[in-house]
Amino acid sequence: MLPQGQVCLGCPPGGYRFHALRAWAEYGGPLRGAIHRLKYKGDMALGESLARPMAALLCSLDWTIDLVCPVPMGVARQQQRGYNQAALLALPLALICGLPYRPGALRKVRQTRTQVGLSRSARRQNVAGAFQADPRSVQGKKILVVDDVATSGATLDACAAALRSAGAQVVYGMTLARAVYLPEQAAANP
Image (tube, rainbow, N blue to C red; front, side, top):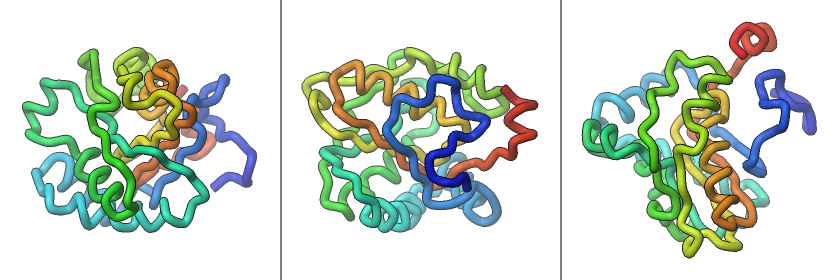
């Protein structure tokens, strides 16, 4: 964890377009296994259980949220998997916290390759312009975008760019887990 106000070496030079990003835990160990079961093994029942600590974290923050939306999947990947793991986290989180859930506020308009194995700069390029927000849903609103794991922050940043372009006032990101990069990894994987 970095001292408050410091920016990690892996962050893009211009910063991110989301206001803040919080993750419940570090990506690894048993949580990594649970995320893989949720994401790749069809264990959809894990969504609600894994969303509970995220909801507790959200309630502890001083964020004003008008609506919650998941990071959307592309049509092909959604059809292949049969569900969106981010939505399985976002819906119970919204319900627990008493917040409106609007999955249609943000959609993926361009198919992208998986982010796994890509460098930080390749991740940013891969998702640039891949999302579009509905101005009628987000204009002037404070939006919470939910995903399972944040690695480089590129996907959440691309979502924030689309939301802000459509008139969202503030965009926050929340994930179940955050991959942690050491300074030497950030320098070796720009």
